[in-house]
Image 1 (cartoon, rainbow, N blue to C red):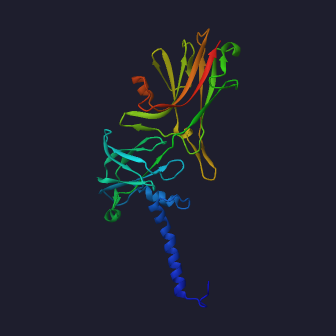
Image 2 (tube, helix red, strand yellow):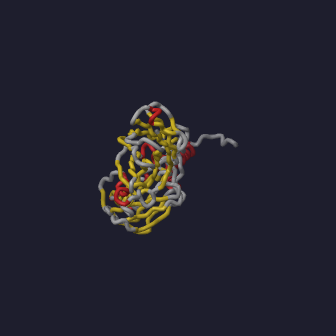
Image 3 (spheres, rainbow, N blue to C red):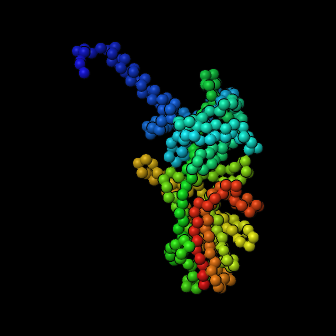
Length: 327
């Protein structure tokens, strides 16, 4: 490149102005296109979730409602995500779909203070239901903004799990293969440690309440014996319901430990390990074999199981473990 042979103060000033403008424009461009930049994530996230921020000099307005949907653990925009606005009775008001930017805006205008449940769903992710109140706006924003402030929701990719079991002596068991022998152990009750492992990065579970089917959506460990039913759990569970002649013990597992979160640099922020203990009593068990099933189930409502005999309209097994008890 040739040299002009002179230093022009006007040229330098123009260059500085252009540089400042270019730098200032970056967050705006990133916000508009939803580009996942680690350098501007705090700026773009704040802009995308103004609906959750306090507003001074607030006023009620009637405008369309924009939403931004991201992966809650990987922190990336989610494309082709269905957003449904439900009224307080669970009836569908409007349905929209996100673009590649993770953004979607309602076709209808809604007034500040209107309350909805927002159902968010995407294949491979946990369907979640979020409470949402159409936000107020500052008077200055209300005068110039086309839409309400953007509301951000994070969706969690459904986890995949394995289960490991050890007894009080530290003996590890293989599902469906190794047995627990009461006679050989010389005890009438024993405590078992149950460890549930999330096997993939940035996957897990997020609980919510489904207003359409009026049920909780939890991950639970459902535990029961097949056989005569002499063996029983005496501790380590949250609730117990009988289905026919079978006793079912339930342990609701926390979302926080069911999620495994790993950053792009490999830093593990959540290890995805859930550990709890149960105590099994032999009772009057004296012959044969009784199998303990530990079934990890999602979209589960234990109270519904107690009332209707099933955990929910969508509950399914995520993983299972089996131990045979003999004497």
